[in-house]
Length: 509
Image 1 (tube, rainbow, N blue to C red):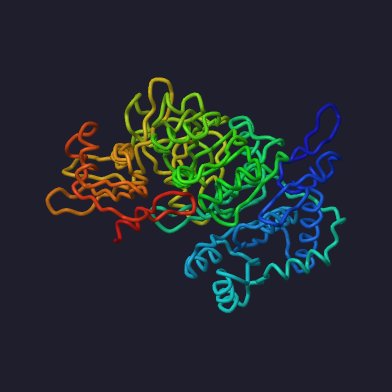
Image 2: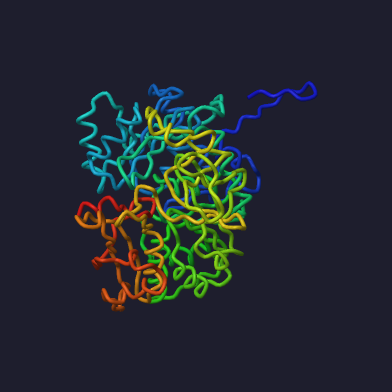
């Protein structure tokens, strides 16, 4: 927007466009590394030149502002170039999960209305890319080699008018843990404002090196990696998550910041127990996606006592709700924290009135809302908003100090014998059992009780845990009706790209 103050006009838009250029023009930063993935490295000057060249090449090919460009790629340096070139044009990026089945990929591309698909045409993704190209002749499909040709032919010196801050930057597909993914539209201003708030809450800056081990197509990897680039820091990306590989990369890259889902942290600590590595460079760990078990917090504190641990609660469609800082990690070990900067959080009853302290209700927020609703889904958007408050279906309560405690998703609540049972508190009790790596609790149909509590348990390598131990772990902490009636030991739980357990898949077993 153009703002006039004291007779002077200046540009006040917050836009992702020219992200690389801002740092490439700085004398002491232009030749510093911006992005690293394996042997592929880009300095800020190289990144800016390639982004501008790709943007010009795509425009010559017919891409216009507001067109949607879908990206089907594994973690690699080119992912950032595509995203930033899309922003430079004023087009909208729509990352697709490289874990998607062909049917899921088709749904994602069709839902976004993509005009262009940039995809890998080799390796594990080749078959799905070819199938999409064959079944959708109207879709302009480019592989990474074609992008290289566009970069080579494009003119990186052409100046582009940046998109308005209200224009869409990102079309995100929600995690879909309880059903099919929904589409969320994220404007430039909202994502940039969110990145600036992250500097305040997490103290992430230009001197940091962030290690990203999760998928870039998902909000955790996408949002944190681009935030680090926005503030001028260095991003080291792993092609895929491997616990030992993450530990080795922290040591070799001297990473200072690590965003990770709780499952990833647990697996990393298991790997560290077997092969200890030097984590002394790491100063900040940010956990997101689901609740971080207390046992994992304790293990992290033992392995890396100087690390500041943050936990945040948020959602693709709503952005950040809360953050739990290092000073509260063990003082409020089961809380997801206080309201995130720029946000007000409350708990609402079903009738929309404010719940009392300690009363379970719908966790809701006001302030910076990332998506503002669901694209072409009026019913879901109406359910998300009530009287100016945004909620995404999570249940919780607030304590006397204003800290939020999540008890579960409303869709995951178990009703047994007419009584509400929250799986999260059962999972928390079982997670404290020595030898348990992961646990998920669901309700299964029962003629007498309506639903019975069932626990799926993953045991850490080298440990032994039996059904009696699982039930006993709940006995001292929970009422009898909350204890698992069924226990199943599994090698692993179905996990989404966000690190969340896909309980709907457990119910389908």
